[in-house]
Structure formats: C-alpha cells, structure tokens
Amino acid sequence: MRLVVLAMLLSATFAPMVLAEVKWEEDGWLATIGLEHLQDGDEFGCYGMPNLAWQADPGAVALECRDYIEARIDASQWGRNPISTYTPNNLTAYQHTLISNQGFSIHGDNTGQSATAWHTAENIPIDEYDWFDLGRRGGSLEKGISDVDELSAELDEGGLVNMYWIGRINDATVRHDSGVIDMLSQRNDVWFTTWGEAYSYWTVERCHQFDHNITNSTLTFEHIDTIACASAAPNAWNVPITWIAELPNATVINSNLVELSVDESNSKEGWRQEGDLLYFTVLKGHPVHFNLSSDVDYDILGRTQFFNNKSSALTIAGHSTTDLFLWSKRFDDNSELRFTWLISPRGLDEGLAWLPYVGLGVLLVSVSGIWLLLKKDAIDQSKAEALMHTSSGGGDDE
Image 1 (cartoon, helix red, strand yellow):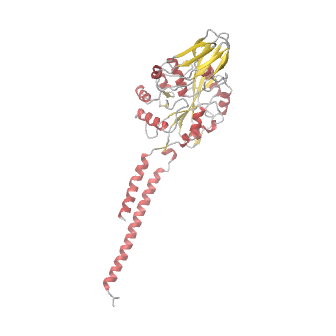
Image 2 (tube, rainbow, N blue to C red; image 1 turned 90 degrees about the vertical axis):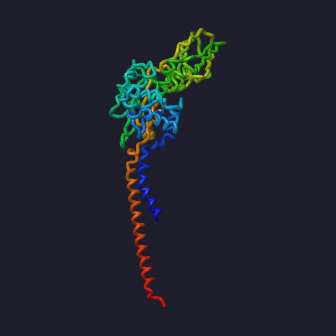
Image 3 (cartoon, one colour; image 1 turned 60 degrees about the horizontal axis):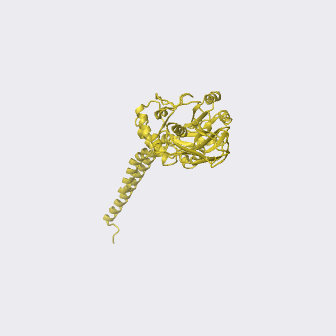
C-alpha cells in the first residue's frame, strides 16, 4: 500500500512537469500531403518554434526549426536543406548573421535591415546579405484585404513580387480572394516560384561556368557544377537556369530536352526558340545538345533574369503555417501557384488548451486514491481490533 501511495504522489508531482516540457505539437500533414506539395514545386521553410524567441536566441530558433523541418520533409524538390525563414523586424545585423550561419539565406519579409532585396522592381539584390530583408509586394491573398489592381501593377513593373498568406487565425478560417487567383491564371509573363528557388536562380549570376561547342550542326552545352561557385553560395539549390543562345538562320530540329511553350510558368528543364534566339533551361551538371538545321556562328548571350525569360516572378509566403491541410487545401485546383510554407509546430496553448487540466485531474485522482486507501486501511484496522477484542474475552471457549 505504501508503494501505491508513493506512486500516486509521484505521478501527481511530476506529471504536470513532464507535460510542461512538451511545448509544441508537430503538424502530421507534413508527412502526407506535404509530399504532394513538394512534388508540385512548393517549398518548406521556417517560421519559428513555440518554445523559443527570435529576439532572445535567434541562432537557437533557426537551428531547432531547421532540425524540425529536416526530420520530417525535404525543403524543396531541388534541395533537402531549408534556406528560407521568417524573422521579426527588430533583429540586429549580427543576429541575422547567426541565422544565416544555420543555413538560412533568405529572411523575410520586411525585416528592417538596411540592405534589401525586391522591395521594388528596381531593388535588385547584389550581395548575399541583401536577402536578409526580402521585401513584400502585392499585398495579401486574403479576401477583403487583397487588391487585384495593385498586384497587377506590381507584376507589370517587374522584379520579384512577394505576397503574404495565412490560412487561419486562431479558430477562424481566412478566406482567399478568388479574383486574385483568376487574374494570375490569365497571365503568361509571370514565373510562379518560391523564395529559395528564386534565390538559388539569382546566385548563378554571381558565379557560373559552362562549356559549349558546335560540331556537325550539333550544339552542346553544360553548366558546370564547380567547387568555386558552390563555395560562393553553399546553401543554394541546383535549380533549372534559363540561358540564351543566338542562332542566326538556324532552327532546332531536336534535343535531349523537352520542348517548352512560352506559357510555361513553373521551373523545369526544356527549350523553346523565338526567331534566332534559343531559350533553354538546364540544371548544373546536365549536358544537353541541340541538333540544328545547319552550322552557324552562334553565341551564348548569358542567362535570363527569370525562368523562361519571364518579365516578373511571384512568390506567396504562407506565414506561421501550423496546419498545412487548412492552409493549402483551397489552392489544390490552382496547379501553377507556388507557395513558400513557413512552418511552425503548433504551440500547446493553441491546439491543446485543455492540457493544464490534465495535471489537475491527475492530482485530484491521486489525492482521491490516497484518501480511499487510507479510509480502507482504517476500516480494516477497526475490524482487526474488534476480532482481537473478541478473542481475548474467551466467552465462547469450551
């Protein structure tokens, strides 16, 4: 009985403490529909951890959030490592460096840093640390807040347009603006991409090397995956890059790449020709060839600013994504849109508000059990004393 009482006391004492150590609950959807979104081209980045604060220890938040994502899902179809993260707008440049040291190269959005990327169409990033303050353009997808005309104007200006989305606030579902989705589906001049994909595409401008030649009317090309370029941007993924070749008076007969249309708006390998210009998109380390109608004096003109020579790029950041299913299900029919899901586990105070009552329940059950055991012990002791009293009287002995 003493052991039982001791066990009850220990359970009442330590159960609330153990429960208190678990401060978040993971999103089980990452292992199911998350894989579908990954194959479709979405990206998974970091938003934060409920048990840690960015201001107090940004390096620890970034590390734990990175470990949380990597243990459950790849960040992108182009790379396993997450490189995109939310950060608040009151961190120092040194704190942003600590976050970058954990592998996160893109910090967003509107983080308050002096060096910035894509806050306007002309705000083209030049250095790596410009991506520590990714801008927000185009507003939100939320119905009643979104502005179709404003978003359309931003896309017309060009550059990277980064929108905002959150699918749920507390217990309220946030509705999206179908008019915005309809407008986007009608445009063929926009590259629908993600934070990490756009950053990785940009890094090629700063360092690249390729081999090319033409023999017997066959043009060959390879974007070489060099150690030097990999060291210049170690966190960048190997994404398809669109190059331009000038082919005077020659046409492509066939290639080991698939042919793309001018309307293709999502990153993939392929080629298309417009007059004397050949636009071909290829991964590093993948040799490609084009059989031409004749030998020509060709020229490799460089890469385009965006995939498939699009004039603008669009990213949509799903902030504080604690439930991937609720955040994403309404966009399942929009195959071209791409989302950067900034992931955070659900804090226990969000999804398990009843948890503090568990500790109280354990305590009440334990105390009640102790009381019942003591009461039973008292009754058993009284019966024993009565039997002893009868035995000592000897009135019934012959």
